[in-house]
Length: 400
Image (tube, one colour):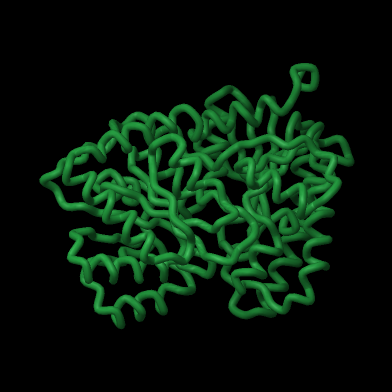
């Protein structure tokens, strides 16, 4: 197959690989040719055509080469990127016919380009990957204001996804929410959880030694909607109880300063901020740890499935999911015996969950959770599995 991937996020100098890098690599390893058009208005990278990590991957960047310095500059960068996508990007894509074009949420930020490729027959089929319900999630966590603009943003998002032949959602809860939020879409719905690079599958599961200390890791952006303040409150409660648990927070973002200040105000001794790490260093940190933590915020109606969960499972780590009531990520982990689920915003329940895994670590039973997490990753959550599921959305007749 020949596949077009249209995305605002892809690896570049100084930029860590991401889910779509792993997907492109898995597709290439499976014998497919992948063209990637990167259109980020805010993440600088060299513009033009380059070779990917595999000879089967070509990357065309039409986005920003510098960081916008103001709100006005940011708007100008968005407009310029949209123009380049529909000129340079369109000329590049028009030289081929693609069996499948893939684009992820937020769909509106692809500026209608995937739909145009579908209309013109340059892409025979269109797959939209729904990771983020826009704009309702951003409105509910306070990232977008005022609320009066929500209907217009929702309409733009719907226009960007309505030509998709297939929509990949992360879980059954996501499918139910999609049906209610965007009523009447004709696309076929498939379930494809977030994934991680299958290359991590070569390492053995973490061996939990009861004589070692207990470290739990949160890895992700320190921005609104991540619930890291709940994790700090839980760490404070654990210190009050005398539970020997270290919490390592790996990531950066606009809320980093306020979270550092809160940790200092609480006098936390068990929490370490290590900043944003290169992927290899982050995975090495996971290998040295005993659990991974995913936290979100309460009061959010769209269900999430934090992708960090998959990285934890790939490293053989048991997972604690502190997620919103609408999410089924926590029940998924508990059903497979790899983690514990508590409600977002409940720092006492989160502290209880961490303390429970500390007890399992001390008793020597935690290793079984880690082994099951590894098995679940290999069976359902690897990039190879995702690539296979995506390829199966295209019928053999259409790839002939």
